[in-house]
Length: 272
Image 1 (tube, rainbow, N blue to C red):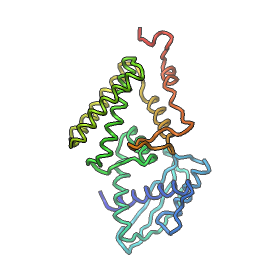
Image 2: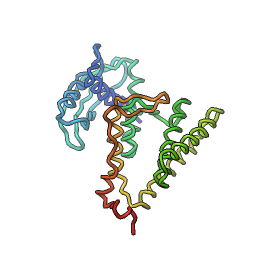
Image 3: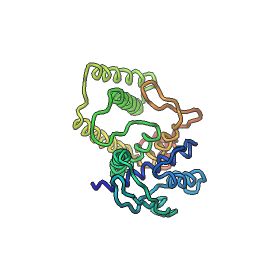
Image 4: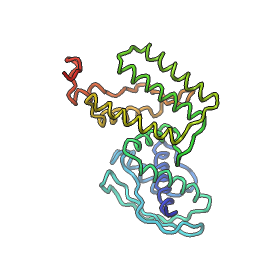
């Protein structure tokens, strides 16, 4: 990967992060790379002209060494449509900016290579201040424990829904599984990263097959769940690090999504 592309991607990430700060009323007071473009992007977001789908696309950048002037032009886009072309902004990058921008660029470019659902989750992680590592590696112990808790909770809810178990039975299953896994981790158990990556994809494969077995089109269900999760922004955080539902939060209307796909609960929901 050419360093200039990493820097350009880093500037894109920096500009969008700055725009988010400005929207929240947290604009930096000191001069900072990309602030003028960020101000314009924030204005678009606040005016509702293009909404949160507006994004910065770099169009031109030359040079990246200390003491050289870097020129980058940007377009604000919605989907494939150019909303506004912004002028080229000359930027001198001091050495201390370069490493940070290249790291941000690696993260951005790796996100662009993700599938659409993982990009949605990456957006959720950024909105909720959750961890995103730029390359395969094992995170801090607290994050490993949190991921174990989240997976056991969702697995328990999956089994509860599959078997028609009541909430108390599901909670007992979740508590048992989490205690078991937490015990392994607290005794010094370490993640096997290749095995974990394989198991994640195998699990996704089986879950997608379960959608098919039950006649569910998962795409609109995903969209409803993702929108509801993004609406948790600003909610409290549990001691374990999980983002909780804020006041007034409403769950996704999964029944409505399934009805739109032809589900008839009056018939018992069976295929026959």
